[in-house]
Every structure is written in C-alpha cells, then in structure tokens.
Figure 1 (cartoon, rainbow, N blue to C red):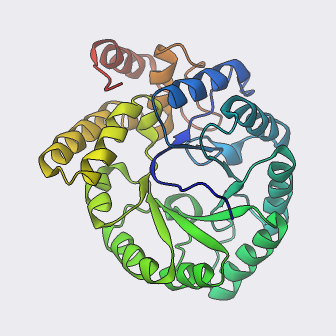
Figure 2: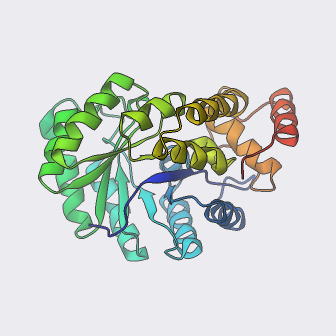
Length: 301
C-alpha cells in the first residue's frame, strides 16, 4: 500500500496534445506545474478526463513518464490503467510499476459489459497481483464502462486488502451515500468525481474530490474542500455555485465535455485545445464563448 493519504483535491489531469494528437510533453509539464503550484493534493493521470484509453500504448507511456518526472514525488500521483481486458490492463500496470508509480486506478473493463461478481473479482484480483506492492484504486464510472461496481463487491475488496479507496463518478447520490456508509465499516474511503453534487458528497463523508474543472481553476475546489473541513455551510454553498458556473461555461460548452476544458486551458497557454479523435472539438462559435469566459473570469488561485 502507498504511504500517502489521498484526500482533498486530486486533479484528474487533462492531456494536452499537439494538432497531430501526440502527447504535448511541454504543455503537460506546464499543466502539472500549474496544479502543484496551486496546492493540488494529488494528480490522476490518464483517466477519463485525461483521455487515457484513447492513446496508443506508446503515447500513453510517454504521458505517464512525463507526469512522473515532472511531479518528482511532490504529491501523490495516480495512473489510470483502464482498458478492454485484464491482459491489457496488466500490461499498463507493469509499465507504471517500472516507471515508479505507487498507485494505479482501475475501472471495470469495457466493451464487454461485466455482468456478475465473479467477473469483477477476477479482474481486480489479477490486477492487484500484477501490481504487487502498488496500491490499487477502484473507479466507478458507468457512463464510460456501462458497468456499475456493486457496493458490496467494493467493500469485499476492501476487507480483502485489495483496495483502500474508490473513485466514484456515477453522479448517483444514493449510490454515493451507500458507498460511503458501507465503505466506512469496511475500511474503504471514497473520492468523488461528480462536480454537480460535490458539496453534498463532501458533507456525506467523501475524503476527497476529483473534479475536471480543477484543471482550469484548482483554487475553487481547494476552497470547497476546506469549507467542508471547517463546516462552513454558507461558504460551501457559494463555492458550489462557482463550480456550477464553471460547468455551465466549460464542461457544457460543446457536445464533448472534455472539449471546453481543453480549449479553456489552451487560452491559458497550455496545449492545442483539441480532444483526441473521435471526440468532437468546439466549433468556432463555441470557442469564442469559452475564450470570452476565460478572459473575463476571475479564477480563485
């Protein structure tokens, strides 16, 4: 298991690319440095926000190596390894281990929907064994995998010593509450990714947040987390309104939720602003709206 406590703001890092869709190492380093300098508590590389499953293994490896070198163990660094089969996930775990990562983050495999507890447990057991002394973090994101990780399976894996954390991004507040309640009895902590209910999730007991808009404005989310620690309900409400504003202007800027954010950070001088194919980039009108927002917005950094 890793020695670092995962709590507070864990940023799911976007992956800047050039117009050739190759990882832009210079821009990725710049983004990581921006997030570390603005007090992020951890970084998650190659997840859904980072478009990890869309890259070739060569570009994925470049992404992970660049992040590891730039982070320099300053804060916890999590690597996303999700893929379509156990063998492909294990290949990524071995690469992360060789680079020096302590943590890997794993969703249910996708394309073929997992349908029973045996399939979930087989995947996670084999991947835990492949990682050896690395810490495995489960990741529930049914919008991308079509599988919902059962709460009882997650609690069982925690009791077996396979996981200590679950990243929960379903947006289902009832599921989140059940996971936090049952997980606390099984030694399982919850990191939540749904920005629309972040205030509620923190008050329910999530130990940390993993918001994609933090790539643009990490300060808002650090303050959101700290408001919960201080039990500042009024401040929490104001900050959640700020989160909702970011979502409306960036996440919902185009047909693809990543596109607006990648363009927003490009307005800050990071990357080309384009998602990886086949994801839809912003059109000219959408770009203009995001640019206007970024130019007039006051980030809480």
